[in-house]
Length: 178
Image (cartoon, rainbow, N blue to C red):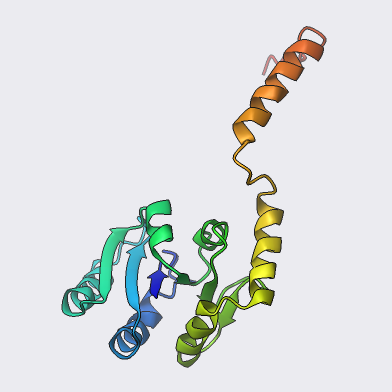
């Protein structure tokens, strides 16, 4: 299994500082591969260097300074994160997310409050429990109801409808001299 760790950059809610020892321990003891990426705004060079050194020493850990989006997502099975908005994008692929101290936990996430719970939470996520997967689908459908690949067609149809039925029928906006 491949675990993607992609924390947010905001110091007050980022797990990057807290989870370095935990990820190091899990990478050494579990048969998981890791991809570690950081938000472009994370600017603690010492922290970045610490993760890079860990990856340099461990063959099952890849440190990519920046996440390549879909390419990175497709290579992984589970995401470990915190409160980053990237979790929604990841779940859109129908993949589980384990969060550490998420600011808005819910049934669509496996949220843990203690670093000692992370390993077991990832194990659980890797099994893709049906109830969790149902909640992920429910949550992502709420955020993006149209995931059928036809959004551009809908936009073009709306433009054609506007031109056919509404163009030339709108009142002018009032003059704004200020």
